[in-house]
Image (cartoon, rainbow, N blue to C red; front, side):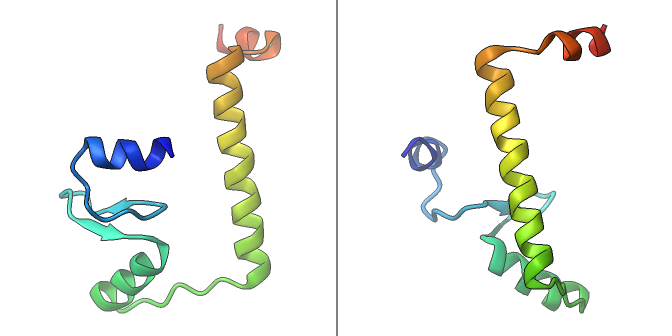
Length: 84
């Protein structure tokens, strides 16, 4: 729900997750549109097996959950020591 509100706050009319942009700020769209963009613009096919896609998804979930944890709870003692 917050994601949609952020999209609206910034004036986006097209809701997609993830939102992918070019470095110039042009909206490409969601993941499938990104794959099509790469194929058309760079003549490259992004090939990933289902297992690779699943692994990437799980890694992304772990990273997102870790970022939320750090935001809500702060760094662990080990992370503070390493950062220092």
